[in-house]
Amino acid sequence: MNHAHSQALFARAQARIPGGVNSPVRAFRGVGGDPVFFREGAGAWLTDVDGNRYVDLVGSWGPLILGHAYPPIIDAAIEAAKRGTTFGAPTAAEVEFAELICATMPAVEMVRLVSSGTEATVAAVRVARGFTGRDFILKFEGCFHGAGDPFLVKAGSGVETLGLPDSPGVPQALAKLTLTAPFNDLAAVERIFAEKGQEIACAIIEPVVGNMGVLVPKPGYLEGLQALCQKHGVLFVMDEVMTGFRLARGGAQELYGLKPDLTTMAKVIGGGMPLGAYGGRRDIMSKVAPAGPVYQSGTLSGNPVAVAAGMACLKALAAPGTYKRLEEVSRLLADGLAAEAKSAEVPVTINRVGSMLTVFFTSEPVYDYTSAKKADTARFGRFFHAMLNEGVYLPPSQFEAAFVSLAIGEPEVAHVLAAARKAFRSLGK
Ligand code: PLP
Image 1 (cartoon, rainbow, N blue to C red):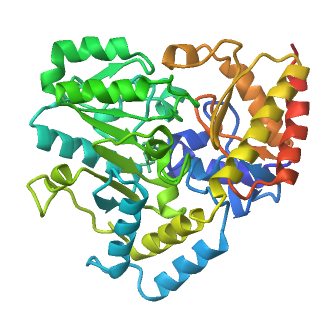
Image 2: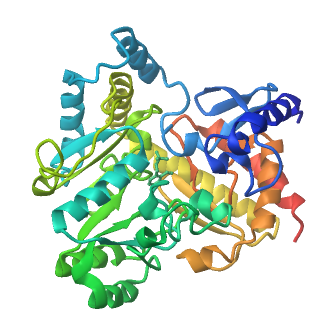
């Protein structure tokens, strides 16, 4: 595969953009080599600037559940843009969108729109602190909630790939307010709450983790965590930026039958446009300005083009059978990858929930940060490049989720599995 144009662009980019990219994990530091620059996407396929084509298993890190350039989303965004790209004033579409979100996620009684997942999680923590009058928060090792200061403590995703568990620039005094516990370990939470429960505003969690690769919550874990939160007056915040509208229309909370106090959303909800949201219990959300004293705002919040795209996306996902189809194709893919790894005698552990999956290069079960770190990242890097060369775009890090889209059908699954057959075999035993 020729990447001459990508390489030339990357050389130029590095002169003007830190690391040549506008978000760290795009730079391929987790797998080595230079990033691919893309020209266009259509359905399940991406085309790079050198004309190479790939089946896309990244989907822009989650938003593109319907594939690239899904016509109803594009049409809705164009129509909205023609009427004006931003007003900085209320619109009817925002009201309809808020009503749709609340109807889809019953735990969300009121919702505020923002422009990214990070904005949503930062605001949710501020509201939790404002509501409870407590300063500490609890997060889980390897979970990533965006690049907000409170979260860059034992964060996964790009922070993990770059080996920067704590980022310079986050004041120690602030980092100290973020307590961490291992994922899937209720006893650890009990110990922390016994000592400090009265000072903790909220526990924020990725209900199914995507940012250490995919980790599946053990049966009863999320329910147990919520019960402990209730016992100690700690707000239970489900970060559904990845899982919302993806694992089920009502997100992980629908899948596991949970009712969090607050929920954060982004990615799928914006249909590929910059849009996020946070919402939850009416008594808590009533504290948000101007209804209440907790300040949060945004010039482009509720942007009409983003809302139109998001609305078209959520409406398309309401079609009967959508999530069943997504589950079936994702299972086909995961089972096929497992079979190819086995026949090449490459030990892997594949974690999957719905359309989120990770092939970990380890034979051991992966259920928390420590077990995820045992994966052979060098081997993953070789697998990633072999797949890329065969026309499959995987997330360029062992510690990220691959996302399956509804645009992926049997021909694409066959293409990925044929690529995987060669890629696994190229690794040697
Ligand atoms: N929360 C989770 C679970 C995420 O996966 C991410 C991003 O990957 C974020 C929050 C931050 O979202 P954004 O990148 O839109 O700021």
